[in-house]
Length: 128
Image (cartoon, rainbow, N blue to C red):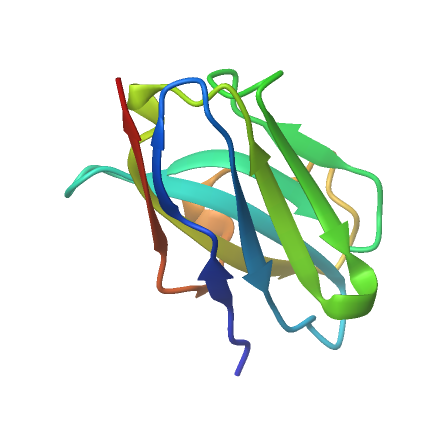
């Protein structure tokens, strides 16, 4: 069973930065993708950023483009989400998730329903 563990959440003032980490296990077959999602209360999860593990493809939601950067340390099976210029509307529980595809996708997916395994989440709170 694939396990994911997020860390790095916390409280920060608007304009500040945080870096989230997700330690994951690769799937043994296919292309592994990892996405960061966020959720406020009982609302649906919003895809924030995604990356093809071991590849170069990344995707970002329009709301975070230019502020958030997703990257990986392949040697440590860790993906990072660097969040700069944080805004109060970025406040949410952040989850990382992984999925596997038998072929390379046209882009790293940001759709919640495509992801199989999920971490427990880490809270990010941005105050104005």
